[in-house]
Length: 69
Image (cartoon, rainbow, N blue to C red; front, side, top):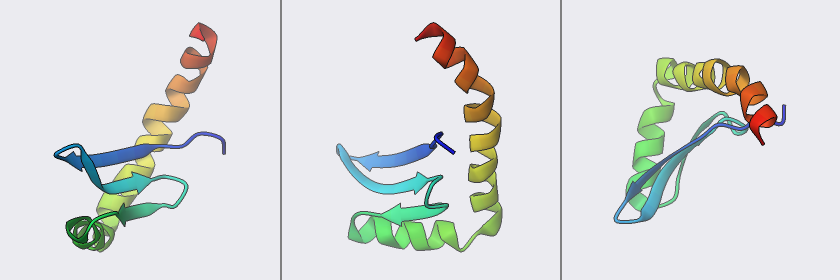
C-alpha cells in the first residue's frame, strides 16, 4: 500500500500528463494534458497495463531497493 507508481509525461520541461497508481488513472495538468488523460482513461486495457506495471516492477524490486538503501 505504501508503494506508488508515477509515470509522468513532459514537454519543454512542463509536466502535462501523469499516471498515478494511487489515483488509478491519468491526470492532466495542461489543456493538452487533460485531453490526453481523457483519451488514455477511455482505454481500459491501457489502465490495466499501468496497474500491472506497478505489480510487476515496483513490488518485485522494493526488497532490493530497501536492502541497498
